[in-house]
Image (cartoon, rainbow, N blue to C red; front, side, top):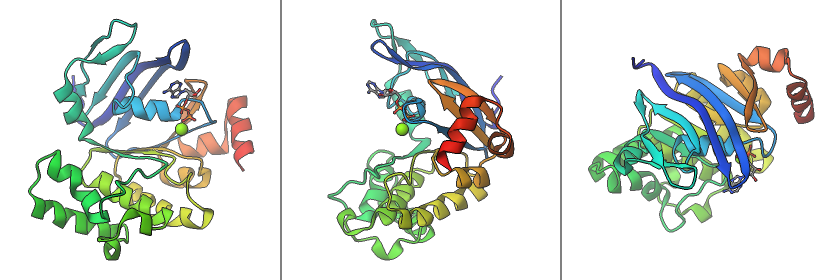
Length: 257
Ligand code: ADP
Ligand code: MG
């Protein structure tokens, strides 16, 4: 039976790159309104996990269900899987807003053009409606006055806030953040965390990969610690950060502070 409150359900996800098995069987459910922080050392598989969820990487095994719809996959003939239905992947992707460490704004487009591009040209939204939504979002992230600026003229913090507005513009069911502040100068981290914090307090469903432990503890309702392609420990933030059980998690937390 499908649970409509279930935003994402990942079951026994594996991913290998050639001989290297990067994800070794990850299962995780995000219900609507969940803010799940994903933490772990470099190379533990955090980015690969997020990228598999929106099919930027193809899983080697396991299943991914978004809002009750399981992504149909078939064997690719090389021991891995591929999507059985491209249209379905497009549809599922349009429910996931992704924000990367490196912003990835289109440099030849203004901020406003970046935000309306996918709604208008991929999702077929009328342009005036997309502009209305974009302007509201740009106000929310504090960038309305930069709507006609090109990315190169923005600070890193402004670019990342524009990237968040762009991800929100498709009106996604879930937001996926992959270390959204790791590429920023320290003085610009706060303005981006403030925007993500607002989204979390509105109970917007999100998976957030971050090294900002204090922030993760404040905004999440569940924390997952990845180690070597497996969930080593998970639980409510106060338990994971305040009373870690695994030695690896203890070590990881003390290495970050
Ligand atoms: P994290 O985000 O936790 O730092 P990643 O998911 O980026 O970790 O990477 C996990 C492991 O997978 C690393 O060993 C990395 O080198 C490897 N990896 C990631 N992407 C690829 C790829 N496209 N090809 C080969 N190896 C990869
Ligand atoms: Mg990463």
